[in-house]
Image (cartoon, rainbow, N blue to C red; front, top):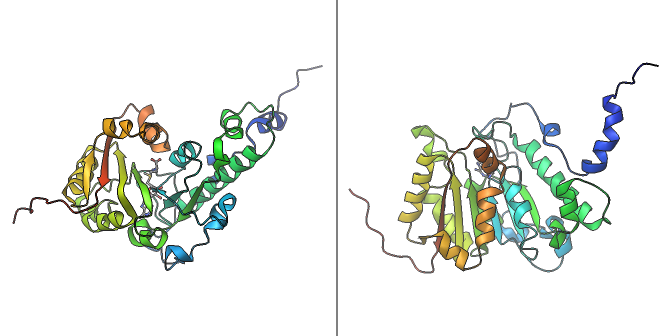
Length: 292
Ligand SMILES: C[S@@+](CC[C@H](N)C(=O)[O-])C[C@H]1O[C@@H](n2cnc3c(N)ncnc32)[C@H](O)[C@@H]1O
């Protein structure tokens, strides 16, 4: 009798034992036909009070809790998934651009990616509430014991450059993340950058005094751009990593540095990363007037 070939089907059940609950990125590809400027097909809430947060965070239903951490441009959700068990009582919301094909995350087509992250959160929640199995999948095994069971994370498809205050009320956030944002290299595209003087006023509005803006990028020019704009804005001031670590925010810094999919890609490619953090201060500080 000849050797029997191990077919794909025969391998499937074993592989499924370990990872079937978690969605796989390769199943979430889609045509790249989206019109980058048409995000108006989405309906936006008129204000954060119109949002049914209970559907986002069912385990917190009726608590009146609202998101306190916002990851603007959350990609494949790495930061949220890393932070969720560290702050199980803090609600976190990630946003995506609803349509645009990111020049940097070329494989990310929003609808598909947001579906992937939604499925990822659902799978982590389900595996956290299920009795432990003999699964060897590290992330699932870890999720089964994760404090809070990922009930505190959710995402929305929303253009944060236009609608952030529709999701977050005044001073409601204690942390705002811009991790590896799209660089928009060309000068004529700089207006599309997620950090700009006009938008900083909105970020200062949704962040509470004492709250922190975390930025990181592997693009030096963008790092300088973000630092220059944030430093020049009267309601933000730079805060160094040592100070944040002394305040107990070291785990956040580690997640910002290590946990996102873009960050991991930069790591694999041995690229450099530039981290910069800024505190939302209570009263505007004097800043030098720009040269005429
Ligand atoms: C390069 S990816 C970075 C993803 C993730 N932060 C990471 O580090 O892996 C840029 C992200 O920004 C999001 N994005 C771009 N423009 C946006 C906008 N105007 N509003 C909300 N999200 C936006 C994209 O959907 C994408 O998730």
